[in-house]
Image (cartoon, rainbow, N blue to C red; front, side):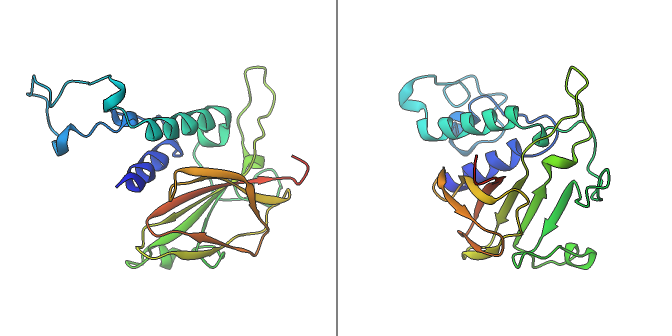
Length: 204
């Protein structure tokens, strides 16, 4: 259950657009399973701000995600993705991958049995500018989703800068800066989990 909460929050906060959280979601507030408490003027609907009612690990996880989102413009672009190479870089701004590392086809998007996929977000293909008019550049990221109950070995595409470094894995709620992978290696994507990797040079 904790993993699924992390999955949903990570999917929301790594998505484009404005993320919206119901007050208390970041602390594990459940409303005892009642998703429609508008007419309940009682403890079912009140926010309990005590430490005892706070899932501190989940709150820390959400804080990490919000800091990551704020720091990296690739997660809050102003323009829609094109899925095509930008400015002659030979690299699309977004790419959708199968677990074998190859790109998904239109037919595979219509498949009813796909349980695992990855999305590549290119930080070199941003078209936005900062407040001084300078072109924005960012790291490139790979987000992998596994909705299957079994683990899936996900073959990683070749990074452009060096290695894939693990930032977040919802299987345990943590990232590990010491865990890194080369292109062509497989990432052990736990069942019902999400993993976020960043393309970093060996020197960074």
